[in-house]
Each structure stands twice: as C-alpha cells, then as structure tokens.
Length: 588
Image 1 (cartoon, rainbow, N blue to C red):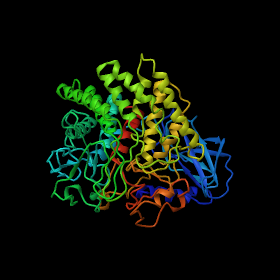
Image 2: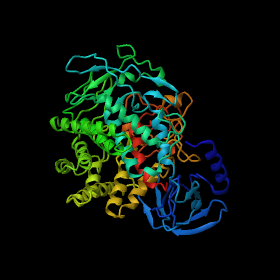
Image 3: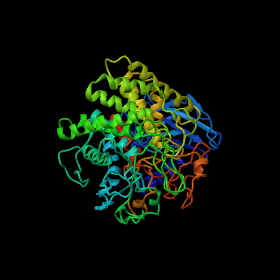
Image 4: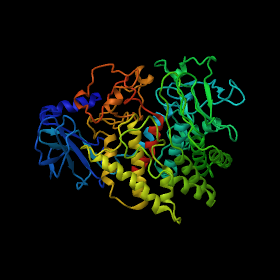
C-alpha cells in the first residue's frame, strides 16, 4: 500500500511520465535497490499489447537518460497482462539513484549502491521484539505470566509449569516449539556467520538502550531461555502453548481474555508422539523426532556461539542437545501442532531434515564422527525438501522450509560428502528454476499459505550454495526471488513492513497492533497465495475495496487488508528466517 510520500512522488510522475498509465503499463523494480555487482532485472507488464524493444535508465536527480538498453527477453503473459518483458540492466554498476522508463511507463526511484541492504537484518529484529511473550517491550507490559498447565501428560493433566517467555507465533498468541526453535537456530546461524553486521541499540528487555551485547544475541537468548523451559528435563518436551481458542479477535497480549478453562493459565501440550486435538479435529503425529531434532540443533549451535561468552550456558546447552538428539533417535516421526476448533494446524510431515541438521550441529560441536554418519544417513533420505518443485503443499507440510543440514554438509571441509550434498542443494534450486520460467518475474515457489517464507528459504539455499561452491549459474534465480520481496512483483509492493521507508509496503496487516493504531515494522507478511486458497479458507474476507484488484492474477493474489490473514499476516519464523540472507548482503 502506498504511504503518503509514495503517493506524492507518484502524483508528480503521473504528470511528467504517465506513471501507472494503464495504456503504457507498469514497471516493477526492487525498491530497496541493487548492489553494483547484482543481477538487476526490472519487469514491464501491460494489460494491452505493447511492443517494447528498448528501455532507458534515467538519473533521478537530473532526469537525464544515462543509458539505453535493448530488450532481449519477452516473457510469457501473466493472466490479463498480455505484454510482459524482463528489462536487464545488470551491466550498469555506477552508484546513484535512478528510474527506468519503457514505453510510457516509469518505475519508482531506486538506488544502486554497496550499502542498500545495510541495517536490514537488525530492522527485522524490530518485529521479533514486538512478538515477545512475557515482558513485551512494545506494549511496555507483561503478558501470559501464568502459563501454564500440562495436557497430554502421562502423569495426568493440569500440572502447573512455568513456560512464560518466547515469542507469539503471528498475530495470534499461540506459541510453538517448531517455529520458535527454527527461528532461534536461524538467528544463531546469522550471528555466527556475520557477527559484525549487528548493532547494539536495545537492552536484553527489548527496550531502547545499549548493553554491550549485539541486539540479535539478546533476541537469541530470549528464545533459548524459553526453549529450555519447554524441554525441562531429559526425554520430556512440550510442543506448544495454547490452541485456536485463542482466536477471539484483536486485543493486546497484555489484555488477553482467551478462556482455556483454568483462569489465566493456558494449556501446554506435552510431546507424546501420538495424534492430539482436544475437540473435533486432530493432527497426524507419528513421533517426536521433528521436535527433538529442532531442540537439538538450536541447543548445539547455541552451545558453540556462547562457548566463550557464557561457558555455563554453553555446557548446559551441550548436554541438552545430546539428550534431545538421543530422544529423537528413540522416537522417529513427526510431532505436529495440535488443532482446536478449526481444521488448521502445522501439518509437518517430514522429520529426517530436523535430525540431519541436529546431527551436523552435534558433529561440529563434538567432532564425533558418529554424528556425521547420522547426518549423511538422514540427509540421503530427503534429497530435496518436498515443497521444492511442487505445485502445492498443505500448511507447513514440509518444515523447516530450507534444509540447513544439507548446507552444513556441503560446506564442511575435509569430508567426502560435500560435493554430494551441494549437488542436492543445486537440484532443489534447479527445480525451482524450472517452475520459474512460467511467469515474467521468474519466481518458482508454490503460492501456498506463507509463500514468502518459502522465498526466504529459497534465498538462503541459493546464497549458501553459491558461497559454498562458487557457482554463480543460479544468480538470476536468486535475484528474482530477492527482488520479489522488495517490490518486483505484480502488486509493486515490498513484503516487509517498513522497508524501504520511502517505498510501497504493507501498512494494513492482520495484527492487533495495526487495528489499534500501531504498526508491525520489520515483519515479513505471509505473501501471495493461489486464488483457490484465498477463496477456500474459513472466516476470510476483505474489509474494504481491493486497491490491488487490477493486479490480481490467476497466478496469485495479495491484499494489504487486515482481514486477509492468508496473505497479510506477519509471522515470527518467516521474519527470523530472512535475517540470515539479509545479513549476508550487508557491508557492515
């Protein structure tokens, strides 16, 4: 949705350059900008037949043409957009601010500079702090301090346990180990690979201030402390807090009135390895390894990261990781989240990827070859994460969306498996690339619920594959998915709230904070879905006229509308999983 500044800019361009003129089409760009050496491709699209043979790059300050390029690639039509072209200007590496003109259409202004991504990884932490449970710095108040009481316990339900902390999953206040452990792991991985890019502007509480600790480490510690509570002793794990009885409308977390039958306490689901669901619907759980593996990988990398900063914590995490991995070996299978009164839950059907990653992190932690053997065995059982190359999947059916175990095996020196697993990573990227040829934006992920999380996963895999192998043959695929998140998409909007600050980004997300006058800066929205998904979900509607109606296609729909929880709700894990990729693009 266009903010006020964007509208003023566009109004000027309407007069001078026929901005957004339906007859001449639209040009979509990465509004955040491009680094000089990046693949740089804009997309022209028109709902009328247009023959575009060249385009010009214009200096935004002087309005002078810098260079004219030939158009070398006409793309397949996209629904009613019958004329689509990819405008490649990669050869231009001079820094500056520019616009692109093709026919009568003019793009938004964008920059080319080394530092266009600087600060973006920290910016996403804004949303993570806002999602905190326990003390929440955004509302400057505490919430859910009475959590919770056990259910599905072998010793009987209703035992009181202290599991306050962690992060709310999305706009609702449910909490899951699956997404929280993955988010914690991704932030640990980000810090361990790019420690110098993170700043110190917030205290451990999440409030403004400097404490000598990078803000990402404070956020990581918030997650680890909660994970330790959710794995209170060997071979005892909790999988989630609360269920969809939470879904009673918008309210601040500190004023949560959801009723679970025990006052202000919420239910804490014990991992049993069997199907769970207190009401009409049940999940299809078959084991515990998916959850145990996620605990183990987060604890193991945490042990390495905190080894010198906090040796006591490091030792505790080491022991927890070893115990969790052993528990996973004893209980193979998936531990899905539990539904309540609606049929929606995280339908995770794979678990060997979790155990592969856990084994690799334990190998890196201990040096014991037995964990390497486990990692290779688990990794060969799922060569490509199954959503890759698929047209569709159930909600969170293949999770995490990126197999970090493959990346660690591919990147490990002095082992005989690195080339094999790099090949598996490339196979997944190539499958995505085949699907990407079907649309002018060259985006090859399936447009299922939380499609932007898949984009973040694909970007992570592409960056790690290129970094590990030096193979840049898939650079355009990576660039297309990166640019998609920042406005090179049919709707011309960034998918991250507040980035870029002077650009087009979501402002009316599905969030209590937004409905009550606030904003969820730094959050990655769920992203576009197939029209069939949007039309089939329960309780879904639009609260106002669709401002993007002209740009909806049979490929995907997106709405900047708080009532559309399928495309415009930010998620904690999707946001956290983008931090690594953005940190890899920063100069500092």
